[in-house]
Image 1 (spheres, one colour):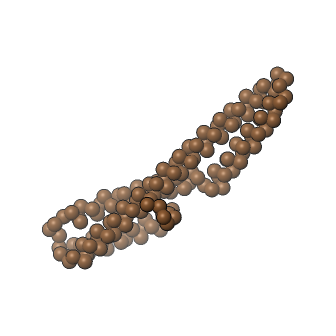
Image 2: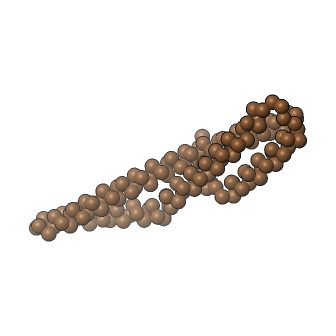
Image 3: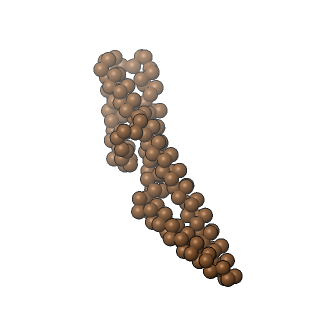
Length: 146
């Protein structure tokens, strides 16, 4: 067993684990952001509908509340669509799951003590192919997220 090969495999798996964690952080962030934005938009839409109903009974000052709620709701909806919040959430979740699968698939080889140098080289080649496939599809992550 070549020490450099097994060290390379360990380092690569540590890098995969960091990417997995970073994608999970971003997935959780975008999931919460999407949930909060949708909740706020739904509440504002409810207030808008109730305000319109109240204006039919002579309370015309509520018309301004309805206009304000409609405007804020529209702006939040535009923000969600322009910045593709649900799409980013899905992409980070997918990347997280793919890195998690790769990590879980290759970590047993690092823990295995009786493995030949040729087997390690084959494992590293397969791992690099899997990483290239995932990294081409995954959403980029910003530096500085631990």
